Length: 245
Ligand SMILES: C[S@@+](CC[C@H](N)C(=O)[O-])C[C@H]1O[C@@H](n2cnc3c(N)ncnc32)[C@H](O)[C@@H]1O
Image 1 (cartoon, rainbow, N blue to C red):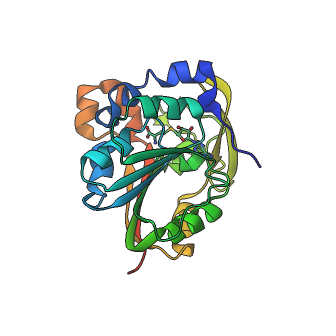
Image 2: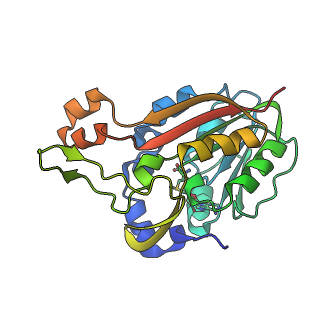
């Protein structure tokens, strides 16, 4: 099964670049403070950034002391921009499909991935590559669209007869592809349960450190009332794990 390379679609990309997180980078990503709190100290680490996109995290890791960073992405357009925004010689970008990539064994102390693994078809294979690439004691930190968010047939709040706002969760246990409209029609994402995300990590021999379910905090809703519905279900699942020493 080949990966969908929607980020090379000019219409999709024209919409994607307008997102806060692509205009302002990590500071424009609401979950970044939480994700950052799950990361180890970058100093001296060799870092791999799976689905690096424009390279925001790759550059942050480099600026915070990583000795090398390898950013991997399928999209030549994302990598073009990542390369043009990067001056550090210790960051390398590679064009590869995470469903096929071969990672060199024992070469990384941190494997990071932000909002990409829900695009990967074969997570078992990827975790086995990741676990092999980590040195003992090395870490994995990743975020994905939360499964409660990714599951429904219709990703849209409804109002119940009682007047409550409701996220119509259905098909949660039915794993597999969801075809969405996101800037363009036909964007394919893989829905998996929370248990599958956690168990695929454990089956690769990693030890779970932390799991978080991110949605906008109450203070953000006070400042931006249009986010009120988003307190009903999380946006993202965040996971941290370690390869035993
Ligand atoms: C939502 S973007 C996230 C980019 C970046 N991690 C960030 O948080 O800004 C997802 C990225 O994953 C890449 N991607 C999707 N499927 C992929 C695959 N099978 N192999 C490699 N990269 C993939 C896309 O090209 C895109 O750059």
